[in-house]
Structures are given as structure tokens and as C-alpha cells.
Image 1 (cartoon, helix red, strand yellow):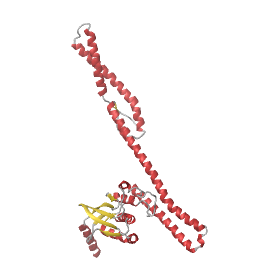
Image 2 (cartoon, helix red, strand yellow):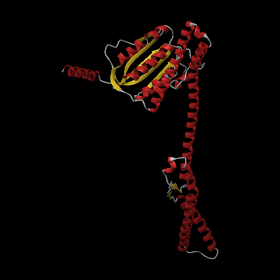
Image 3 (cartoon, helix red, strand yellow):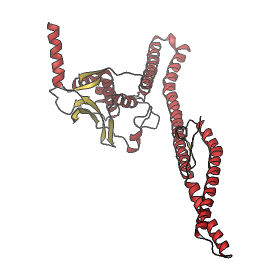
Image 4 (tube, one colour):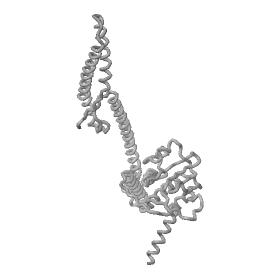
Length: 364
């Protein structure tokens, strides 16, 4: 990398003025002992002294900076520092110190970020292995039991094979969620945007989860009657997954005979906010900032009695953010939780017009 020299004369100028003043004072004081020195001679002496001092100091500073500090710049360039690679070497010591301090601060932040990522990687690998080994050991246990002789009993054989199948299904569920979240984080999953009725989509999700909610005695309901459709723009399939994951959480962690209530409200002119509220146990405040992390669970005991891959909320967050929208969470212990996200609203009149145009074209 070619390093250019950016000259600065501040140091040489100030140093030369100080040296010239001191030399001139000594020169005048020395000559006054032998007689008065004419002022023109004094000024000429001061000027010549200043020029000589300035030239020597400037040359020495430039050589010192260019030969020694340039080596530091060249070494730093190996670290691909955009701060140094894009700027010439300056002979201004104050500017140089500021650049070095700025570079050091940037590297400190970079190192801290790498440490955080390393901890996150370790946690992630630990969580993945924990999530996978439970169903794997379950399947292995049932298969080994069958091989040890239980397969000769028809009832036990069917029972253990069914349980092993459940373990395999859980493995597939976790792997699918991991694949999905990896694609979402890498930006490889393209959204197929369309206009659709969010009220209809929520009702369909209610229907899909009706039996699951009935087992926990949780009621799935709207906050009010929505006689008219509310059209939004987004990937219909992915938004349904968002609704499904949020409602499953509300059912899973809700209280028996509780409710999971959904509301759709106008936020601003072209936005709506969808709220999913439950009256469950609530979430302690210290857990809320980490709720959307992969495999993070509020229950730190390691219990997996409620099932799930531990990726549901992480997937929800990535899908919502892939739409360029925001997701929020509010919760209070022993009161309940509310998850909400925004969506782009489309004109119902436009949607109706499009339907009419399609029907007209079809009739022709």
C-alpha cells in the first residue's frame, strides 16, 4: 500500500519561534556587553535564525514521521484498517495521536464484538446439541428395547415404534426450523408478497389450532367483531406462520381456561398493528430482551415438557423484519403477555376494484 505524506507545519513553526526568540534574546544580551546592537541587525539575525530552525526541524520531523510512523501505518494496513488505508501520513502529532486512538477504539469494539459472537456461537452449539440429543436418545432407546426382544410382543412393538416415530418427527421439526431460520438470517428466503385479508388469515389460524387450544382449555378469540376485511401486503404463508407461532406460545404458556386474544388496529395511515394477548403467567422483565434469541427459554430448568424447537420466536422476529416491519413484546408476571407486530396496509377499495376487474375479464 502506497502511503502519502501529508505535511503539517504547526510543530516546526511553534518550535522555531520559541528557539528563535531565545537565541535572539541571548544574542542581543551578549552584544549589549560590548555596545548597542542595531535593531535592523537584530531583526535580520532573528529572521535568519527562524528560517534555519524551521527548515531543520521540519525536515527532521518529516523524516522521523515518514520513516518510523509510516512503518506503523504499513503494519496496521495488514489489519485492513479503512481508517489508515484511506488517509495519508500526517506530520501533525496531535492529529496522528487522534487517529491512533480512534483506530485503537475501533479495534477494541471489534474485539468485544468477536468475543460476544464467540460466546453466542458456543451457546448456540450447546443448545443445538441439547435439543437434538433428547429425541435422538429417545428413538435409540425404543429401538434398542425392540432389538432386545420387545419386538416379539405386537402391542409393545407398535407402541414403541409410534413413540420412536414421534422422536423422529421432533427431529425433523427442529431441522426444518433450523433450515428456515438459517435462510432468513442469510437473506436467502425470498418473500412472495401479495395483498390478503389479515382477518381471514387469523380465523384460519384459529381453526388450525382449535383442537390444540381445546386440550389446554384456552379460548382463541378476536377482541371484537370485524365485519369488514382488512387488507395487508406481505407473504401470506410466512405471516400465517408468525400468527401460528405466536398463538401456539399463547396456548402453550397460557393458564387453563384462559384466553388468547387477537386484535388488529390502525397504527398510522398505511400501517396496522396485530396484537396477540394472553392472560398467562407472564414473563419476568430480565428475560424479555432475550426472548427472540434462538433456543432461549424463560424456563432455565431445562424442562422440555411443552415441546417445540425453541426457535419459534426467533423465526417470528426474522419473518417480521424481513417484511421491513417491527415486533414488540410487553409482559407482566401473573397478568399476561402481549406480542405485536406491524404490517403494511393496502386499500380495500383497490383490492375490491382488482377483484371486479378480474371477474369482468373472466366473464368476457
